Each structure stands twice: as C-alpha cells, then as structure tokens.
Amino acid sequence: LLLTVEENTVREAAAESAQKVADILPQEAFQGAYAEMVARLATKEWFTARISAAGLIAFSYERFTADQRKESVTNFAALCVDDTPMVRRVASQFLGEMFQTVVKADGRDTLFEDGVLTTELVPLYEKLASNDQPDSVRLQTTENCALFGKVLTALAKESPLSDSEVSLVKRLVPLIVATIDDRSWRVRWTAASKFANVIAAFSALPEAIDSLVPAYEKLLQDPEAEVRTAATFNLAEVAKCEAMVQASTVASGEELAEGPRITVAERLVKRITNLTEDDSEHVRAALAMVATQLAPILGKDATISYLVPPVLLLLRDAASEVRLNLISSLSALNEVIGVDLLSQSLLPAILDLAQDGKWRIRLAIIEHVPMLAEQLGKEFFSEKLSSLCVGWLGDDISSIRSAAAQSLKELTALFGSDWAVEYLLPSISDIRFHQSYLRRLTAVQACTLMSTVMEPEIAMLELLPLVLEMATDTVPNIRFNVAKGLEKMGPVCGRSAYEAQIRPVLSILVEDEDRDVQFFALTASKSLDTKFGTANK
Image 1 (cartoon, rainbow, N blue to C red):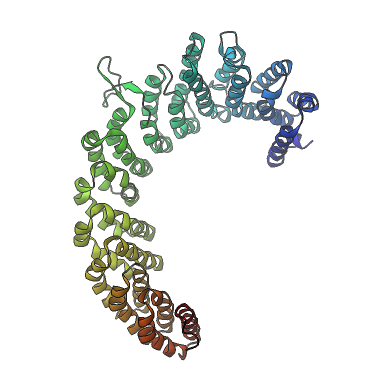
Image 2 (image 1 turned 90 degrees about the horizontal axis):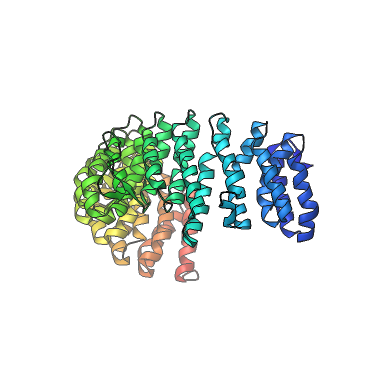
C-alpha cells in the first residue's frame, strides 16, 4: 500500500524498506510472493505504483528466475514508454542501473546482436533520449550513458570487445553528443556537470574520445553562462583522461585532418585563454578554481608555455572573486613550476584583495596567507606582505581581526620566533596604545596566540611583558582578556615566569572592581595553580 501513495517521500521510504526486506528473504519467498508483488506494481492502473516498480525491478533482477527476468525486462520496457511522463522519468533514472544488473546477471551474451540489451534496453535508451521526450526524461541521458560506458569498459578490461559490443559503443556515443545541442539548457547543463564521468567511462573504448572531447569543447562555448560554468568546473577532471585525441585549431575548432595525436590536457589547455575573456564572472571564477590543476598533468614545459599566460590574466581580472579563487588554488601550480614566475603578479592581486570592499573577500585572503607565505618564501613575504598582515588587526570587522590574529600565529610557526619578533611585534606593540579598545583587544589576542608557538624564552621575554602591561587598561574587556591570555601563556613561559610575573598580576585582577574580570582572573589562577602545583602554597 505504501508503495502506491502519492507522497514521494513516503513512497521512496517504502521502496527502501522493501529492498531491505528483500535482502533477508529466502530465495523461495523472494521468487514467490516478492516477485509477484513487483509484477503487480508494474501493471497497476495508478501511476504511483508503476513508479515504485521501476526501481524495484532494477534492484531485484539478479535474484529472479530466468522466466521472471524475461517478464521483468518486458515490464521495465513498458514503464519506459508509459503514457505518464513521471513514470518514464523514473524508469529512465533506473535504466543505467538496469543495464548494469542485466550484464552482471546474464553475462556478455546480452550484448550480442540478438541479446536482450541490444534488442530491448538500448532502443529504449535511444527513445528516451529523443527530442520528443520531456526535459525531465532527457535529463537522465548523460548519467545513463556514463553507466553504460562503465559496463563496457569493465568488459573491455576482461577481454577485447566483440564486433557487436563495438557497434553498441558507436550507437551510444552519438546520443550523449546530441545532448550538447539539446534545445533545453537544463539538459545541456546536466551534460556539462557530469561530462567528466562520461569521459572517464568511455576513455578506454575505441574511437569514443575523438567524438566526446569536441563535444565537451562545445559545452565550454555554450550560449548559457550556467552551462559554461558547469563545463568549466569539470575541466581538470576531463583533462586527466589518458587517451590521445586529434589536434584541432583553436580559432575554428575544426579537427586537423593530419598531424600527431595529443593528450586531452594539451588540447584543452589551449581553450583556457578564451575562457579568461568570458563575459560571465562565474565562468572565470570557475576557471580560476580548476585551471592550476592542469599543471601536474601537463608537466613543467607545457605549463610555462600554455598555462602560465592565462593564469597571469586571471590574476589581473577585474572581479575579486576570480582573483581570490586563483590564489587559493595556486598550490598545484607551485608544485610544478614554483611560484617565482608569478610572484610579481601575485603581489598586486593580493594587495587589491586585502583592501576589497567585501569583508568576506578580505577574510578569505587572510585565511590563505600562511599558504602564500610558504610558497613565496620568507624573504619575499617579509619584504612585501608582513606589514599587511599586521595591518589587518586594525580592520573594522571583528571576524577579520580574529582571523588576522590566527594568521599571525601560523606565520610565527612557519617562519620562527625570531622572524615574528623582528617583523610583527613592533607593529603589535604600537596597537596596544590605540584609542579604540577593540584594536587593543586584538593585540592581546594576537600576543596570546603567537606565544603558543614560540620558544618559551622568547615568549617570556618579548610577549609576556606586552600582555602584562595591558592588565591596567581602563576597559574591563581588555583586563579580563588579559586574564584569559595569561592562562594560556603561563604553561608556555614556565613556573618561574608564573610565580614572578603572572601570579602577582592575576592576584590584582582577582580584586578588580569588575565582576567579569574577577571571574576570569580567578579561573586563570586556579588553572595555573593546578598546573604548577602551587595551590596550597
């Protein structure tokens, strides 16, 4: 009954439960009452029952008897051409799974010219992919094609494909290529977003890639920006295909009749420059996220020749989102060619993003600063960007100031305590006297975080005095944050510093006129007394 209700959520949950029950049924009950139930659902008058049947047939096929399998294929074929579009849509969703299950259950014989797949299921796929079907049905074409390709690739690894199987590949590939020109942008978008799966499924099959790669390039030039964006996100995954393809002229897109075959990555990288000039910011932002991932595939020489120029263009893009995405994905490029070639172009891009009007952009670049520091090197970073990092402590947005303090901690861990003392502490020390208590508060937080990754002696000599001096600040928020900071700094600086410097200050703060200051000072005192075993002294 629940398998026939109109509410999708209930029906889908009932189908999942039916499958779990079927898993534990003995074979006799499965091929008896359960098989009869699936057959009844497939021929019910009300369409919701037939929707449930589509998924159950694909799930159950392997455990059916030979006669039941024939009946199931007949019923499934009827569902694929059902008068109700919703039934056809769900049946098309399970068509690829049905294809896999039939091959697994009945073997490669089903792919012969007179086999059930060749005569029954593939014609259904061709029919469901045709333009006279609703968009919701045609949307499944790409996913089904990828599943078909996986099955044929797995068979090809076992033994060479037969003539009938090769013929089947030649029937399937034009169907996926046809989705590239579909009248519905939703169908083209689905194809673009899943095209990497299609390439992976068909890369080892004869002659398929020569048709699929040009189709993918066409998606990169689709009239709809959403389709181009989805296709661009798949660029790196498609480029990983190891098959060789015919070269083409970028200007015309025409295949070269003669000449050496090249890798997919070598062909696609020549399209990147055109994408950097795309009218849509979303397309360029997607490109910035994935372009550098081509570097390990191309190798150093090809990366320098073909990939670095468009990357430099993206670094100068007018949209901050594009520049940010590229900077956040530079690690792959750095591993292949180093960042020296880009360092001079990186600097203006980083400086622009650091002053961007959108605080989320500034926050994102701050979070990437430690990664950039590691790639740019200590000398370049110290000279060009160290002052910028401290400057973020004075930002108007609280989240920016907190992220900046965390960033200084990570930079201290990366470059060492001596570097932090030389390049960071002078500016932080000046912030302690800023008229805004929020800025002074950030200085306390930065000193506390940096001390946790410093050598104990340097933390005690350089940072601890700065924090202790702020215990007399006129603003209670500063004083109780000093107490919280001392609780973290105490274990770093050691027992002698605690007894000589930290404990006397906390004793004063415990008697503070503000209750919050008293509370945090008392908490810190108890914690450190326990840590150093001085509670009873």
